[in-house]
Image 1 (cartoon, one colour):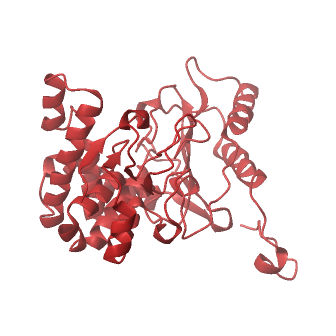
Image 2: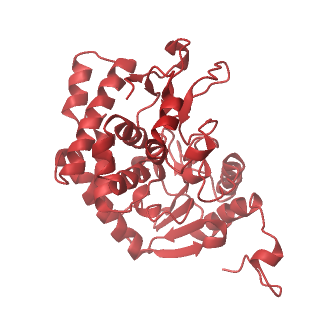
Image 3: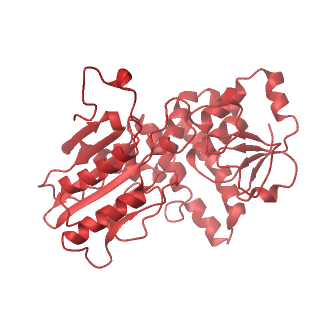
Length: 368
């Protein structure tokens, strides 16, 4: 197989064609028409016959081609390229660089990739492997990442070393589910606690809107802030609202999943509500209810990021947070008002199916 290169900037790759493994391989000012894409990111040019929901499955699809067809696709390519570092990309690279080991663990690799890119939780083992790969890059959790930081290794050189080390960690954990426990044990324990918190909450399944709402019990003493792998883990819903009534007000998180962002072939993408408009509407309602405390407001990530979140509280919540933590604050709005605003935003952008397909005899498809 081809050698591996990490290149966050495609213009640094020169003119020879390469294979982009996962990631968003194109930018408006870079024209690389000769490259092969093995990616589910928006803008990919992955061959139609190889398209799958995850880049890991696309890599497996390449392996399954007839040898002559596969060699034809790879014939003039000089490298396998990652341009960002995440679980699905590492799994896809593992498939291509260590095909025999990958074939023996295909189901688990698919689960791990889904845990990484879709916040899925098909098994505790998949959640643990994804956590280990994510934490490997954190100097506060990983001795390897801390060593790179002490040595002053930064940029693509650092990411390339982390990617290669990730392949080793992944290989170890595919063989031994207890390997590298220091990188995932705490996360798995928290994931179990998150599942218990959701089980204790009220749940409204608005399946026709690809939307679920969890509301904590009013007497719950703990901050209602379960992790994404808990509330998006079964893969049925692409958006979730988590509401936590407290004596001081209501905490809220509204999360859009990645299945409405990636080039997913197994199901149509749900239309995304306008988070900017929703934020403005909630801020106006907050002001009418007495105003937000200093430093707090309704905030949202960019609409076109892979998995944006809207929350009430302080700024600075990073992209793709498992939990909102200290960024959450209680809003003056009650749970019913928050739910109404969010539901209106979801409905406003929803494409209604034909009545003949989804509703009969005057059935109200918005009935809950």
